Amino acid sequence: PQLFLYSQILIALSKNEAKYATTGTPMEFWAFWKEQKDVENKVRDIINTPLASEKKDRLFRDRFKYVRKYFDALEAEGGREVTEQDRVVHALCRPERLLDLTFHYILFDAGEKKIARYQQYFCVKKIMDRITTIDNMGKRLGGVVWHTQGSGKSLTMVMLAKAIALEPTIDNHKIILVTDRIDLDDQIYRTFHHCGKELEQARTGKHLLELIGGHKERIITTIIDKFDAAVGAKDVKNADPNIFVLVDEGHRGQYGPLHAKMKKVLPNACYIGFTGTPVMKKHKNTVATFGGLIDSYTIDQAVEDKAVVPLLYEGRHVEQKVDSESIDIWFEKITEKLSKEQAADLKKKFATTDQLNKAEQKVMRIAWDISEHFRDNWQSTGFKAQLVAQDKATALMYKKYLDEFGMVISEVLVSGPDDREGEEDIYKENKEGIIRFWKVMMDKYGTEKEYNRQIINAFKYGEIPEIIVVVDKLITGFD
Image (cartoon, rainbow, N blue to C red):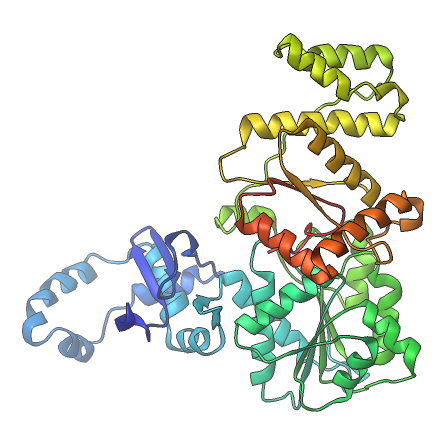
């Protein structure tokens, strides 16, 4: 394979199908290319323009002389229709596009050579066109990029950083990557680091201010809360218009009040929001805040391109009415296939059912349904599951009942009791239980970072846990 180390783009062509990749790309990651402008007529003109006689003389000479009659006969037949092969050869192999892709849009991710998919290429082009435009206030234009989850949003950000660094009209640039979760901050730091980019991760609000004011660091990662701490620490601002703030999952609610604090510290920066979540009506203010929609790549497009697998929905119904009669009916249903001994053992576990509040009874029944469904359909297949709870107290409740039923092995991954957690007010939750759980986790893992790392790695690469229970973590942007 070393023979092909310097090959930049590999293209597999047939008349009606074409895919491209780089050396070492697994078959399932070879990609389709789609132009975003209609070039059909242009390609048709190119393929149906006869070669000049002197070009034929050079092309069909020596041992290839015998082929000339064949091509002359093809030309004499007249024009032909454009094929997929024609489209992709024109899209990827014309000199200016080939050199652009090779120089700007190939990177190494943890040693793996990767090339931009078409949506990444055109997205970066659109962003660069936008940010090199200066408004009448002397600021660069920003906006929002909506690319569905799984379509390579983080690598698009890496390619954008490279494009900004190579743009001759932008001097002494600085790029700040902003997320709202510690795990996402770590993830985007790793992505850039694996792609060979030198960057600094802000540890505190004070450290963030030092990095923003410094001249050495070109790329910085931070969670948005550190801007809150930075503004509270001292009145510092950097009015440089060559600062680019790339905000991951910029539609989320907590960006609202903190966005103003970012702008206080960086009043002239160019803000670009990236989201994998559909931009709904309620998020239109967010889009306007950033400066409008720059580009979109929907889940339907990604499924059509085979970039992601389709999302399938199966509704599950658990009886909403919770009383002693419905509990008895439900108990009979779930024990009908059990022996008398198994049913008696299960009844002991449900002995306290009448003493539970309605919310907990509902969680218990859903936990049973999930346990049965996973055991019967997915256990030992290599597939795993994610259970999203409405708050931390409910997440711990699910874990309790999943463990009691004993059909699946689960873990809970939540943030600490004092951390920001979506739009939920943690003081409304059963805080004592959460604090007890958190103490056990910290005794076991030492730090929140290590707790996150070990649970996520076990979920990704180990046999257990089979189910991971979360609230806001690992839902958007989880690699």
